[in-house]
Length: 112
Image (cartoon, rainbow, N blue to C red):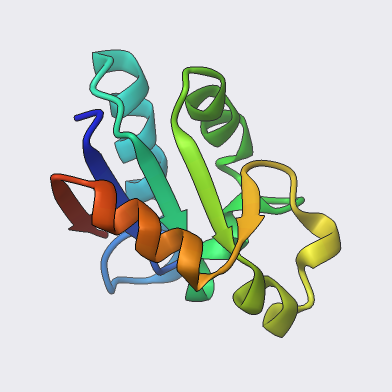
């Protein structure tokens, strides 16, 4: 999956209650780590950026993904919009151009 980019646009996965969305995302990331099926990048925008900031329940797992070579890209516009730019704890802050570049280089793009 190294040539795969995963787009994270919600503060979790799916369109269920926020608690279930977060639980599903936490399980998804844990399984990526356990199975060693690591994507090349995760791109976070809109509400997805909230997963990579101070207080997020999945910070440890995202940090482990980053340590194992997964590129985590956070949308600066979204962080600024939510007032979260100073609370980023994992990943690199980039722009939509960085997200587009990751998608362009990917063989497969998955949207959660």
